[in-house]
Length: 548
Image (cartoon, rainbow, N blue to C red; front, side, top):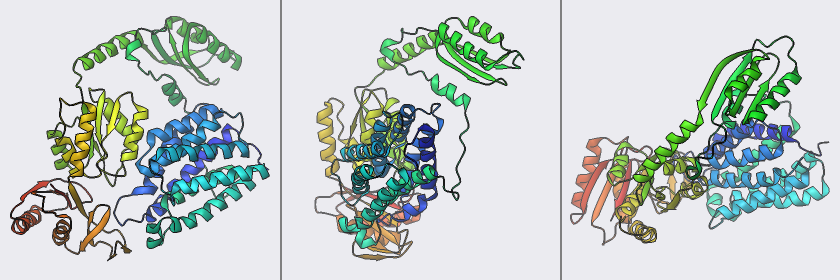
């Protein structure tokens, strides 16, 4: 019977869940309802959980507080796409409870699941039932009930996983689009794969291949020496020299207690002390004002190798000077946009976008990617243009990872992003610009032409794999075997009398002759409109269309 889970077992459960999710990524992707080649749920959940699992794997401590912190930190930093961001909130909520426990019981694990459910729901502005949210909420509710009856984790997991499967099978009844496609919710399935993987890690099934965790001393050193700069307090460096070295060819008289004593002596002369190893090799890291003493202490045990001493006071000066220069060149506002394709990227740069994150439908940037881009803009206020509905939630979560103020303009397409940026007024306030940008994006009719990745029936169309499809307003509105015919039909469906400009971004797979032919046909069909074709170079989409 397994009545408690310690740090070592918890680490094993997370690693097992990561492997199991990675193995099932393609299967989860196959449950995506929309027949667009977007790598969506399975990939996003796998990349998010892999980031969390990596942090847990690399955590130098088996204390649950450290492991819980690593789990939550890794999940948030790696969150990708809507499904990934929601998953990150589930994991962060669970981590907040796990960190408080010396050992995990079924009752505390149930409480952790409840925290994860609550945090996930809070992350979504308008929660939609029949999704991963429904699955985690129902499983968490049952977990609290099961914990009262089952102190043994195997019995507990049996009940919780069975409930998860039952509610997952009900998701098509809660979400009509799932029922019409004949599938269960992909995010819910992904969540069950994760908890099933945890169960595998707990029970150590013989048919499951577990990785063994190696102590990566260099990684421990690196993680402990991270220098997070507070530019307003750079003078507060107590110990000036970052000192690192290895002790090799250790004296025969040296004992394990001598290594412990070395660690104690280093702590007396500095901080951020790492002193790990055995009688074959010792790795040392310390921040101190007396590196000579640190080296002298170590020489009593053996020979020194790979010495490195950095002057952090000088680094402090350089960072402060760099920050002052950046502050002097700061702009009142900055812009970050997500885009793919050389042509589209060039358009955004010409419009004054400071940082462009490569991404889109097939590659959703994480919250950390967005935060890093914002950090590279010399401005405190950043306007963020996701240009894809599956990136908006990650963009909103990026605010938690930076001190910059990120103002997300919820653009769901490249045309909306361009229109919103054109409405920017350097002399306006943040509030005025946000309002103007949202108004501008609302006046754009946009569409996209891509292909169906599988045979399916949706939005009143029977689609065959490889057939060209026109998308507008989140639905399929046209289809044909020919790209240009599909595009013409799409534009006809979304055209209104007030539109005078037609802008087409041609994708990477479109030949110039084909785009020119399309332009000629549009000029004939809409003589009162100005028709512009731009080589966008974007993947996946043959054409992106903007009507204004």
